[in-house]
Image: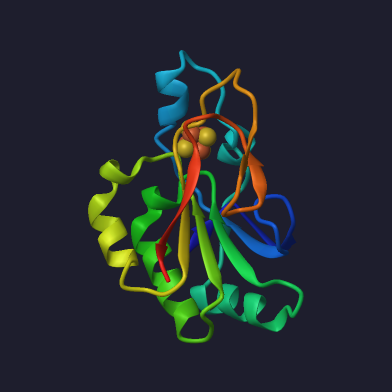
Amino acid sequence: MIVKRIESEWFQDYRLPSMLVAFPHCSFKCEKENEGCCCQNSALATAPNIDVSIDEIVKTYMKDHITSAIIMGGLEPFDSWDDLYSLIKALREHTNDLVIIYTGYYPNEVREYVSKLRELNNIVVKWGRFVPYQNKHWDNILGVKLASDNQYAERISE
Ligand code: SF4
């Protein structure tokens, strides 16, 4: 699958050390709705693509004993649905560690995907567009601050 970045130890999007997988596509919906301002991940759009197998990502995660969660992050994971779902399914053959999906969508925009994900264990989704010029607020589920008031995390499966 194609990704923009993999960090085997990542500390800024969840209260515990996590692995970050950065997905390669987005329709840039936040920018379109805010007169061209300001995608939080725009630097990734021009970063080189990395072609890596799902097996390799799973192995990278499993061999690191510091991390206890996997973050599927921006650009926009749901815009690479087949790869996102295949990767989470492959992880679930080895571990029930928390999977966190950072999306700019709202639940009603990806309802069918969410019902498929609810069949898998231990998944949290951070919902909502980035809206500029707001104060950061604390999210109790993630244990970090989110950038705009409309954004929130939700546990979609146990
Ligand atoms: S969803 Fe993420 S990557 Fe897409 S426009 Fe919004 S901030 Fe940028």
